[in-house]
Length: 375
Image 1 (cartoon, one colour):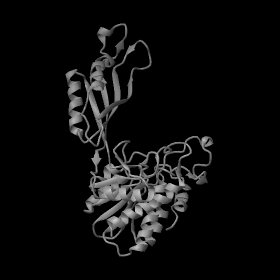
Image 2: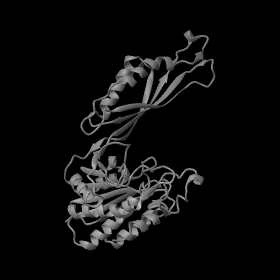
Image 3: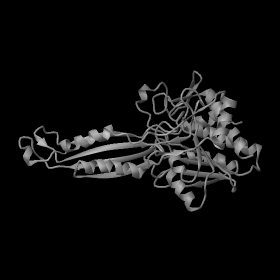
Image 4: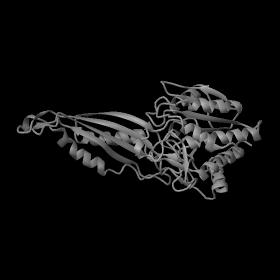
């Protein structure tokens, strides 16, 4: 099997700070084309997207990931240049080593080996790669999914290479994610002098009882796969900075992380009801970051779990914890999605890294999954 370490090094050496791709996808397309993949440039809005598929019949197994990385932060606090891949103490260091250039390298090495073993395999295998996962996620995976939907293409199984593991490779499989619903609430008052409150209307005072009620509200009880829905205020602003002026308006940013026990509409309706109850003069701008999705234990989860047991020697736990991933977009055309990748303890941090042993095991796990799903 080709070395995932070598390819991971090549990818890390390309400074693909979001939304830049820095030629990563061209490198991947070159290798995949040699393995018989039809590579399609699906770039949109300045974002590089790659859809590479081999085969035309179901079932289709898709590996999904992103070549963009977050900025490295203070360079003088890294032990080595974040864009010069460095091996020391049994680890590969560099920005993207864990999130998620090593996973992409493992994808490619696994499919190369699979197509050598089974040039006439059943079904199809694909890679969906974007450079807009760490950014606003507007012109990345979601646009590729839209294109596939327009063509009537669906995906049967998807493995997202996000760093899902907690302490050791394969100890955790993400089999779903909570939804994310954000809002910007503007409460309108009447600006005035603090010495003449009867001539003004303070939006801070008016919001306070409603805010207390919202903070105390239990939105749902969650279920066996998800914790209860959480509502959090992320920012609040009012006033001019002058101590003797009652503000004329207040802006509050908030976010729901919601389970399948609630819906976008039910959460909106319940929050609106509280605001109406308190007779606030207000308006809300809503943004749906992603719906919750869940893959029940079944064929994909079981096959990936067995591959982890065979190559990493552990039985994975199933989890829906964490933030959002591009799986939320792929769920529109794929019923079974899991996230499996490196340990996440160093992602977005200084001195990001992956264990070399994990970089050896990961392509073998992906390869065994291919063998089982596309015999």
